[in-house]
Length: 375
Image (cartoon, rainbow, N blue to C red; front, side, top):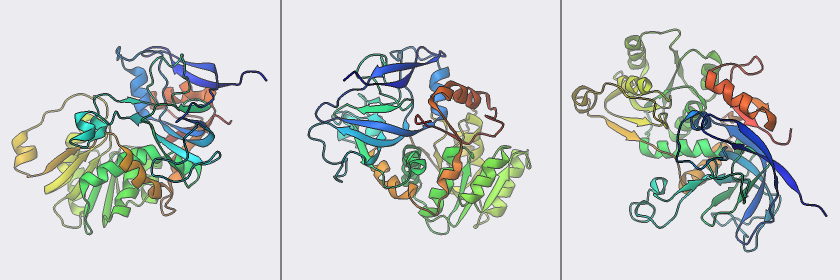
């Protein structure tokens, strides 16, 4: 019987090309899992990584981290997922891309493993052209080989399961926000993270959700489907002072949003978010996951006089994945509608380029692209 091989992409260098390799499929070692990928979300973070000039990454690297798939084979000793649910070949699972050491100060003492000082991740794995291969989501398989890996069973469809990783980011931000019944929540930004935040805010108890987007009508329509009570478009209200007035007018208390989530990845969007929050309210920053520059910030006017809390919510960890599992399966949220394109592996670089350039793909606006290696 010949050696089995499968396809997986590696990024050859900063701002380089995605090279589709053909690698030997491993037989799982004890304690490991081989996953056959069903879908992987094409994420804007990967566009930033691709276009950055971060030289300390050991290229080539394997990208792709919004992964759902089927257990192809189990290494010896693997009988359950992270929370103890029985696991067998054929089960659908989601993997937590970030791998924490469980030994450092942040993992053990302050219990914020997302700040682990010795972390690595499926999705920016170094030397991806070398064994063990299959270390990112842009391929046919993922080899979950690191002993600190965390994966969970996913009891929903693949087009919902693909959103487990981004929903875990949102669950993390919700725990920071501490939404209460009667709250008005503003979600600034109508990309995939913003749209998922709208749905999660409603489930968390927000009584009114106001979604703010730029000019993409499709995204604001999806915001309404995800539960937004009010949508505000930069195209309709181009002046920031007028957008602030609209938020205050539509807030249930008349004084602005109790909680604002900034999910837009620009520095100016964060500054605008400070306009929308009421005095003594909370702003949760989610969108500026990569460095988007600086803004003028007045500690007196923006922070002390308003008496607000500003919280940076970075990444996610195992707790957030477990909490996200029932949310992605919740039929009240039309999560699959966020997928505007499903494409084969061979269209990866084309898809990332369209996101980078802010262009349409196949004549349609992009909200979320799903890469399907089965096509």
